[in-house]
Every structure is written in structure tokens, then in C-alpha cells.
Length: 432
Image 1 (cartoon, rainbow, N blue to C red):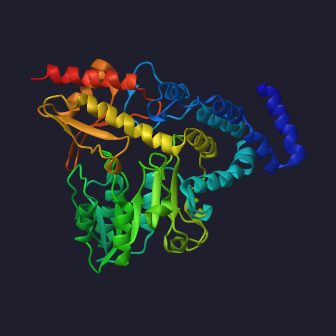
Image 2: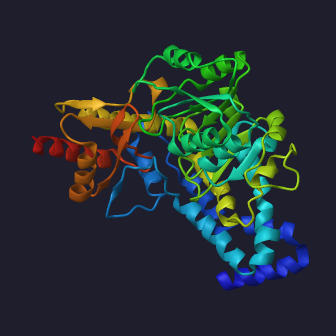
Image 3: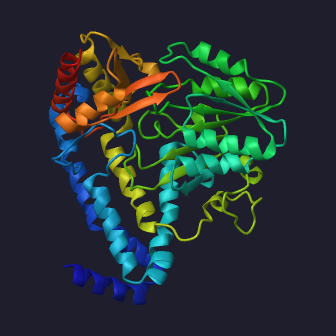
């Protein structure tokens, strides 16, 4: 069957040209499979959030190792089978004639992916750059924005280290000033968060950096309120959306920010090494690209993609990930992820010395949570969970946050979480 398909594609290339061939290639086995999956998706009975039949169907759309239970989806998420198949299809085809097929056929599909990402994000495709991860997206802004000695940037001690290090590099080389917010964790007062940022504003503040969801404990910050407060003072806003895109139900324009970066290989479950940068249209000319294009001051968002050879198969399979995500629906997904977080937290509440570093109130968290047990080092809990129970989590020791981060996903069942909480109870009971 594969040989026949290759022969068909070669003949089609001669007869119809690259653009038509891409359309034929896009009608892949993965597309057919996704259509069948959507047709067979169980109709929810009652509240879909707790409909085990519905979510069991979703679970079977993923490949899972029988050797470990993965509760560290916060690091990187697995791709559904259909996304893996799409990537493999594009990759096999590209390898049949890389210099031509990859650049002139497969690469043509990037614009369709850009358009579909823009629809999902609720913005113009002229504001979306396809990059490799959140770090690349936000460091494009960090190193590209015009700043001079003495200009101030406001960020938090809880921010992701790659972005902190990027700002520190500019501080060391160019003499900009970093002003720090140190938030107590968890925090359930949006006004207090806004005030903590406001206290660092001055007439030299040029930008604030905000994590939409803090990766260490899942704390959701009031981005829109922070953006509005900053804009009142003429300050730009850059948002780290690594953990909220395809996790929370929102559109980028709802946030009122100027720049937004995310990793698509997290909650969208796209191929590894795929990300997205959003820059407000009017801001594009003022940001210098990380890798130089012909015109670095252009207003074309594609200037941020001038990185040379890249994985087109990975980028094209983003389109399949979007369709799978839409099949579930963001409202269902957000509700299910929040339900799973609350499910395991409720099951651990009776452990003596338990401390939750994550709020269970809806506005302040969703699927990512963090806990600690008094008298037991988080690293020891992580070690025991993995070595004795084959459950993979990650221990966190960062500003005001020490504990175990737990991140289930849509393929995680309540049976899985029962095994996890039983293991934590056993560990707590075995330690003096």
C-alpha cells in the first residue's frame, strides 16, 4: 500500500505540481483516522467531566508505557497516536527527496498550520510565529526589545529560569535593572498580586514579565488585570503562557498583553520541539529577531522564523494536534484537568502534615498541583514514588515553593490517581 502511494504521489507531482501534491499528502491516513475517531467519540452521559466511558476512549487515543505512570505532564506531554502517525507520514515523505519535498511540498503547509493556530488563539495569523518552544519565543522578545542602560524590567522570583537568565544576561551586558516581585504561594487574592507588581513600577519601567500559570505549582495569575495596570503606566507586557495554551479556555487577545509565548508540545500535545510566539501586530517592527532575516525591522511576523533548517514534519503535525484538541473541546478539557487535580488533592487531605502549595479554587489553578508532607523531603517522596511504585512525578525546590508537582493529563484515569494517592499514603505512613 505504501509503495502504491509513493508511486501515486510521484505521478501526481509531475501532473499537478507541489501545491496540489501537498493537498493530496495532507489527506493522509492520520486525517482519515482522526475523522473516524471523531465519529466514534462516545456521547457523554450526564456530566462529561466524570464520564469514565468518554475519558477511557480518550485514554486509548494515546500510547502509554506499561512500565511507569506518568504524572509529570508539566514537563512535556505525549502526542496522541494520530499526531504521531501524522508526523511519521510527513517525515517519511520528506525523506524520499528532502531537498525538494521538504522545502517545496511539505513546507508549503506551514501557512495552513499558522492559520489554524491563529484561529485557536483568537488572533490574526499575521501575529503568529511558529518556533520551537516557550524559551525561544520569549527570548526573541527579551533579546529583541530595544532597551538602554537604566531601563527597568519587573518579573517574579517564581518565573521560569531560562527567562530569568536571559534578563540577567541583558542586565550584565547592558546595565538594565531587574525589579523583583516575590509572591507567597499559593495566593488567592488577585488585587494583592497586582499591587505587588505596582509597587515595583517606576518611570523607568519598560516591561513586565508575567507567568500565566506558574510551572512550579500551577498558580494562575491575573494577567489581564496586570496588563491593564501596566498599560496605564505605558509599560509593555510579556506573558509566559507555556502552561495555559490548550489547558485553559481563553483567547490571547483576552489577556490584553503585547507578547505571548508558549510550547505546543505541552498541553496541545503537538510533536516535541514545537512552540508559538504571538506579537501584537503593531509591535512586530520594534522587536529584533534572534536569528537575523533580510530585514530585521520588517513588520512581517515570519522574520522571527529565520532559523535555517527546521523540522517541517513536526510543524505540520501541529495541525493534527489542533484537530484532536478540538475533538475533545477546550471547555471539557479544562474541566477534566481541574477535576483530576482536585480528585487527588482531596484524597490526600487526611495525611498528617500534608501541605498543598496549590489553590483548589477555580480562578487560581487548573490541572497542575503541588503538595508537600511535613518531615519528608520532596526529593525523597519523588524517589519512593518512582523506585517503589513506578510513578513519575517531579520534586520542586524554588522560590517559596517546595514540594512534589503532580500533573495528570486527559489520558489519566481516576484509577491511575487512586494508585498514586494510595502510594503517597503508604510513603507517609512509612516515614517517622
